Amino acid sequence: MLRRAWALFRTLPAFRQVPSLLYWSPTVLFATTALYVPIHITGRSMQPSLNPDSSPWRDIGIFDRASVRVSRDYQKGDVVALRSPGDVNHMLVKRIAGMEGDVVRTLPPYPDLIVHVPRGHVWVEGDEPFYSDDSNLFGPVPAALIDSKLIAIVWPLPRVGRVSRPETPRESEAQYRHAMATFERDRSRSAKVTFDGVAKY
Amino acid sequence: MSLHRWSPRWLSNFRSASWKDRGIYTGKTCLHLLNLACAIHLISEYIGRPSTMTGPSMLPTLAHDGELVIEDRLSVRLFPERISRGDIVILQSPLEPGRIICKRILGMPGDIVCVDPTGVLAPSTEHVIVPKGHVWISGDNAAYSRDSREYGPVSMSLIQGRLFARIWPLQKATIFRNPATSLD
Image (tube, rainbow over all chains, first blue to last red; front, top):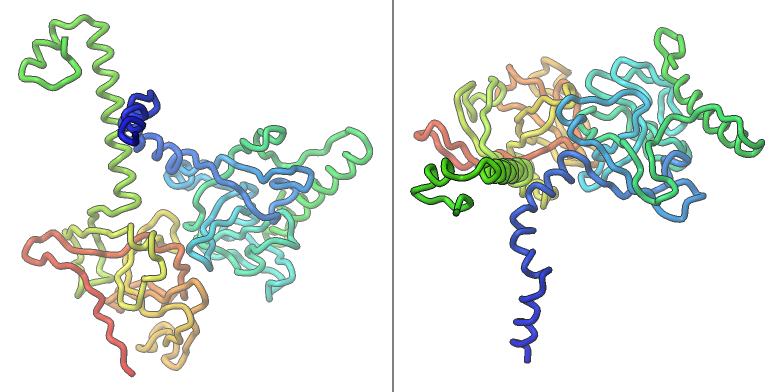
């Protein structure tokens, strides 16, 4: 009986595909681990850009790893995935608030009011300062910990698309106020990075 | 026509095949080569690979130049908690992203280490506690090494692999074992 079931199972087209699937798995794995990596984003530290309360699903983002690894292509304002400096098994998704050489105005948990981002380091922050374990907690992080940068959200379907920096909209009153608050938050975050005392936008 | 399998008469088969069959065969071969390259990349990224080392910072253990060593990346990825004092690790430089350095681990999280026993870079009485998730690294050749004495404890997330063995030159081939002994 079992043998007959096994014989039947082996004739299924799906089973006959298994060896060839295994054979081609390196290409698939390479594409999804070295080129474009899908990451399920947890936590609320990047609200409202990622995982907003209005969405019932947690976001899945496609992160570009090749350009970060090969050409170290990331700038201030990019959303990046980085390996947590304090925990080997943990990844963080944050926004780069300051590159090396910038002077950043910090938020409360950090002991100093302003900090000079040292050589080879970046200052990362969540968009939601209250729930975020970011550089305000553990200081500047080595840029080598940056693993990939977010290029688009692919799930949930209504949120599919690129994550752009907030713009000034002219929609209804409530939407306008909400968007303005987001915009102001972004501006204040940028204004915290000063160069010779002058805010850079 | 049996172009898809290797045979002694492969070349004459290829010549006698039509242009369409030649195109299909060439395309398929390229795909297989691409697949092979991906497999090699994945193995070297996640399991281990041979690599060359240059620089004087590990001098009595590793020569300045011309040695081929094997990195073990799998054990660091699978069991990051098994990294211990005395291991030679390969890690990304905290100062220059993209640069790979090779140092020995002197202190694990929670250890109290002397910043510089020689007193050159810091007074020899200065001690620090290595924070959680960080290690204290140092080159074996202290005089020619930029390490934790200069930039402090480094995150364990920067560690990419452990030095497993030296395979070239053949007379000096060794498997690197952890030399640390604990004193009670």
